[in-house]
Image (cartoon, rainbow, N blue to C red; front, side, top):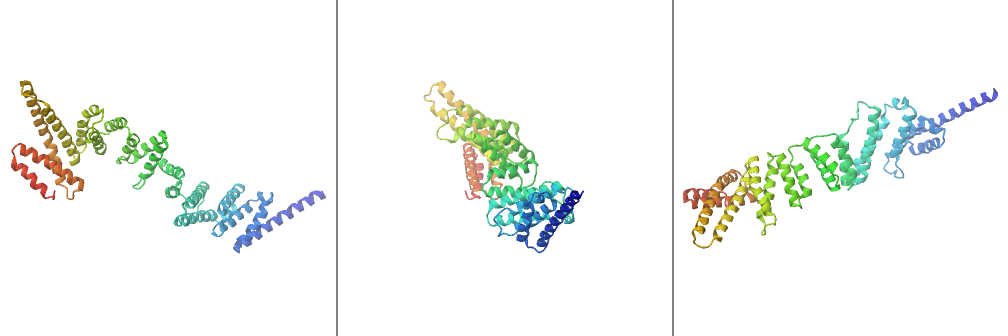
Length: 415
């Protein structure tokens, strides 16, 4: 019996001494003597018995949080130690007695400390440091949200869009592309949408194209197109990987234009690509005959999607090429045999027919360019070209007044 009584006395005495040590730590905290408080709390937590005491961990969290606010303390990650200490406290005291008495302000102080340092690092161009601190802000924020803590009406969002953007942006500035994409991906997976958020989806698509990750490229391409269907970027993202292989490029264009017949950007660019491939070079490609029949159809589809002066001009250029081709064929026929005469006559009729087909496109293009207030340099060049075509046509038809009207109109533009 005496042994039991003595044991109980020793336990009580030990508990009293332990409580006194914690009171001493609290006094130093209240006096803001954090270095001294650190020495005391470290001693307490070096003892296995002390490690089982929830309040000891709570005090460590307070001490280390405040030391972490001191920019001269660089020998260790004080705020990280504080965060781990608080988590240990909540584990040992599910009722959160100490935290409740403090209105859980300590976790919010830790949050603010990380955030303040992240901003300081960013302003000092220490982007890697800013990234790490913003990442820690998120870790604390998610823990606060998980626990359901609030402080004086401050509520942590279930998903903090602005914070994720900050983390991704600082990682990008620190040249940590892989890390940045982790957070851009989280944002995209939430399907966030807004005027300035389209770039998130574009960055992810470009990143996964570069990585050769077809599944993720397709995933974020589909998400981006779903949220921003008006953007033409998604077409370019599918076309850019095959630009160096014309056969693959044209096959992809055919696939996309078939699925998007009313998209002007797509149809016009396809028409330009085809026209330039077949007609723009000094030497025709070996497979020009394969793609030549597709050119007029592609241009007509672009005009149908949107009858712009540029699209109509492209048809004028194409039909002009057909005129030149027919005239070359006629000049190549020699002699005055009935057969030769007939062939030249038939070709002349085809030339006139092609001219007549060309003119409505030329007039539409001319009207479109002259209807603009301020022409860009390339548009002035296009206007000059189409006006010359119309002037030549009406002079050929001996409609000289009509030809002169185009000459006078184009002079108004200083061309």
